[in-house]
Image (cartoon, rainbow, N blue to C red; front, side, top):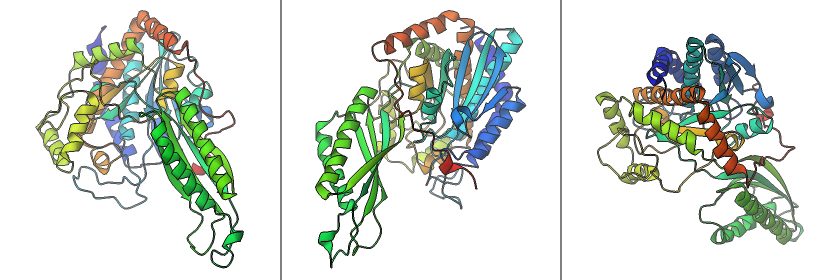
Length: 474
């Protein structure tokens, strides 16, 4: 590794400004495609640190990119800043205490994700300038990771076309290289239309759209026995047809979220679910139309980049948590079950250790965790360019993702130290790639080998546009 300590010092030089950015974004949580204030904060920070800024990437008002440097390789560092509904919480309080307002909260740590990624990019920018190295670093502010598939739209529109490698991270209970194990997914709305009638006086004249949705759900439930065990299917009612039981419901809508380990498997499951929807319409003499809402690909691994990131982690060591941090984490662990805490260790593929509230080790690269995984639109970036992700230790071990406990820890010293720690790791990987063209070449060769048999095909329908209008202010 070349001059690793220098890039780490550059991260430290900017850490206070980006801790403040993270805290500001925590205090203005916004949902997918509505991150107008958060994106504005990121744009202002990019301008303040001398980046060349481009806005509205892929036609998305809350997507922003900052670039620095000239010629040479292009290193992308990816950030996010969208929040989640129903996870509002007072900071630092280890009991459920929602804040007044709309109930939105940063229960996945994306306030840290965006600020930490930009901190790394800023340090790399300074490193390029001080060492006279040819190369470019880009910070991509990516909205709507939580179900909005913004990166998939950005990939489809060519936003990463000239990028050599991409680096990102995600808040976690441990410091590690993120195992490239996620599920491709697709969200589809099934809208049934039947015929309303008086449910008592003329039931024979009605054709219930609600019956069609319920029959579809039954069909999918039976299908679950006959699909791969690592696939997942979830659903939510968007419109149950009304609240009057004496009316045959003439319309109803259900959203299905279908997940599989790869895109071919996903497409096969989608076809089967569509057939069940058609069958439900046939049985109820209703009609059904479908609309794809979003879709993302599974993550693609990259061994050379993962090894380079592991080297940075092992050289740096675990985050510098202190007794005060451990005491706070222990308070949050009191709100969790033993199963929550044990599950966190098992997901990382390491032995369960009691009485350990915070990460005090670097997870070995060869550790393989339990196969319970979710989805991310970073997957589409990983199919377009060689990509690597870190896990940054920013909260108490056992804290569930998408929980009020995670929101509550988002402005803590634990979160701040973990964010700066992982920014050093990402910046270190970027500098290693800029210093060693062979690393980029090996990463590209690995990527080409993985995509040769199955080239990337964007899972989004060509006609589908980012759903930004529904989130426009005012």
